[in-house]
Length: 410
Image: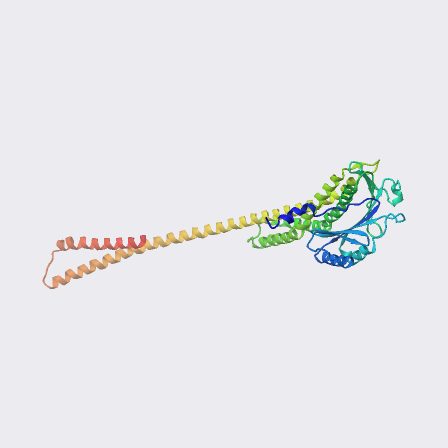
């Protein structure tokens, strides 16, 4: 059996919903997890419940004072969902219980989302949204009309987003799943929106980079600089800054795209229907959330296009430099050819002179030899001397010429 088989199979049951019946309050908070937040919260939960949670698990459930607390570890964030049955005298939007408020206060800087869902039955709810303090809320029938959800998506003084779910025909299983979808929409929407400040910051930086790229392109087109080295250094600097900017934002924009797809999927799973003349929850959320996602995607694409443009300009400049280098090499080779041709001509002249000088010395030696023989009383007729020494001199000169030719050929 593969060592990972059991773990991979159990992913089907990794994040079950909390199943419950109305009326109830569900307090949901999400913290950005840098590794220390999750461990600190789990340690705190272990102290409260007198039982250490499994820190290797991705989720778990803890019973605290008769209340069910579910924790979940995600890639970038950590969530807590506390189920509190609603009493008859309980206010519609209570403050979080002490067990949860303590954790929130200790990690407030990492808090990215806080939502409170009030689940009422069809018979127990007030019948109108004004009784719950909503101001011009959005509402939808969800689950094929088996429940109705209301929210004005305005934060309370404590920074909590409030949702009202009126259950008509959902059983405990479907009710838990429906509430989970609503909470996931809020949490993943906030996580996806984390890249918006970064995108706005990059928008200003990219505008400066584009202006700089335009100036560099004009300099490259004018070709007034004697050497491309300064221009190449400027383009390399711009490319390095773009690469650093991309490395800083690429992971955040990819996460935004992934979170946005989850939000779209969860909204589709609500199976919304209109309630009177009120806008649907999905319509209200997507009206501003979708432009946020598109803006971040546009900045990411703009950054990639700019990086490609810089790379193309860099290639053009390198090509131009290469052409100039080849022209210089061609000029140098042409000069070397001319110099070699001149040297060859000089060498030929020297060879000719050498043969003439050698011939002169040979015939001088022959003449001295003949004069010496005459002094000894041996007289050789001139015609006989010419007939013997002429071919011999020609043979010696021919051998010398042939030897010079062999040395040159090698």
